[in-house]
Length: 277
Image 1 (cartoon, one colour):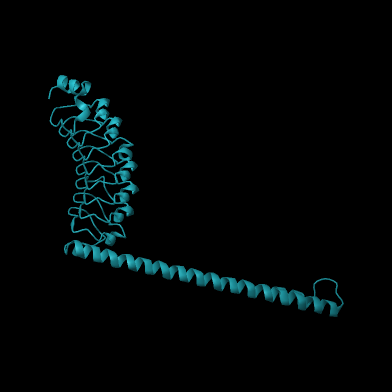
Image 2 (cartoon, one colour):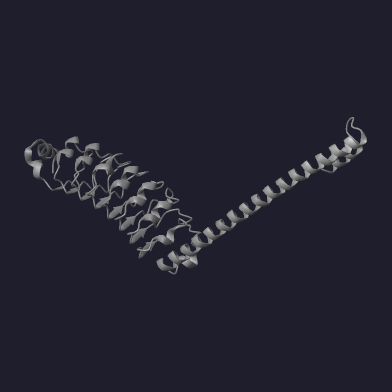
């Protein structure tokens, strides 16, 4: 589609009922803000272009179910993209230069597939854990940039497939064993320490079992530490009360001795008793 035709499309009344739009492989460097007027659009493919940004107005395409913006030059997504696109089920943003995902992505409650492989992601927002319908997540090949995952990723109760290959992840989240629906996991080409290689070699179920047991051990250890702290505090409190009582007792005895000896300054008994305390 040449640019003239592209402009005509968005200036005519044709867009009112448009449900599917394929603009892939057109060397496009930008999209017009008027794309937000495609209120009935359900499928949008802008892959294999030269886009550096997506217009903020794209969030107004509230009926969008599939968005493919892969193989472009995107460095970020619109900040509010998730607040309006609550019907989006598939988001493909692979092969770009995206460094982070907006917090609003957690509002895409219908999202089932998120493909963000081959970007420059430094991490994921904690809100990622709110994607309760997410089934497939591809974060592979973010290379040296992706070194860890947020703990909230284990809140993805319906996640079935997770690709973390070709990154720099050393440790999986402690609660990783809670991903009960996970049946396919790829962690190849990561310097993993937890879980160890021998566990990884046994597959996803072994990994989940290992991480689940490790989490139980962590909780047990923390519980023991708390009990020890409470015990130490109780013993310290008892010792403080005992010392206070002893000082009170000694003070009374000292006063009695002073009166008996006739008063007048610190007696030898006072001095001795205070020194002992």
